[in-house]
Amino acid sequence: MPLFVYCEDRSSFVAQNEVALSKKESHHLFVLREHEGTCVVVFDGLGHTRQGILKWKSCNAYVQFTKSVEHCKIPLPYISLVQVLPNEPATFEGVLKKACELGVHTIYPVLGERTEGKRWTQHVWNCKRTRFQHLMVDACKQAKNPILPILSSAIHAFHDIPWESFNQRFYGSLLPSTPIKKVTVDATAKSIACVVGPEGGFSPEENQLLAMYAQPMRLSPYVLRVETATVSALACLRNL
Image (cartoon, rainbow, N blue to C red):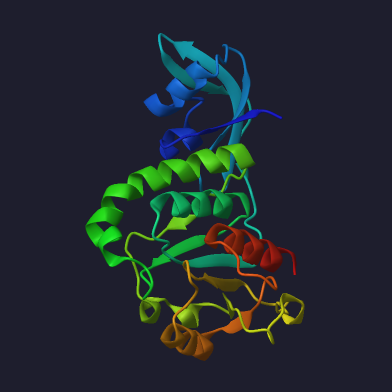
């Protein structure tokens, strides 16, 4: 399968016969020792791909296109991940990678009651967001997913989430009466919200609020780590 590379220059990607890759992409290809003439697929993160061959000019990588733009259909339903921020940024980075592999459409970070607020101020989020974006690009390249998830620019509270924009809403629960096998995804649903809690689970107040908007689902008879719960929930909803 051809190597996936990311193009930030979307206008040239569509209109030109050749496009220059970013310094980051060029460096990555140089480290991989990819030679001139290698077949690659360029994607723009919006579901468009274009095949070409790799060219080098000094240390800068270019792609000479050999085919026209192809439009990849976004799979329905759109799944939005409402993720309560874990205390460790590294844990959230793992969640972002898995979200790309499982085809998440939008990611809403939430500051929960059990999240240490001093670790996730809006300033901290703004500083880390560029790194998060790079991680998602790399994850999409590895997964051959041409559609980059939309990462919210701000940290949300639960009442800020646009609940009414989703056809169905689910949240991870520890209640024994809500096994995943009882969850049903409406065949006509175009958008689904999947809510995953932090370490220690949701607070009683958060559980009460979520019950007003979403359907609970228990993913396992055991308590799951944040990243395990996220992967399990997304995979289940994608395949129900």
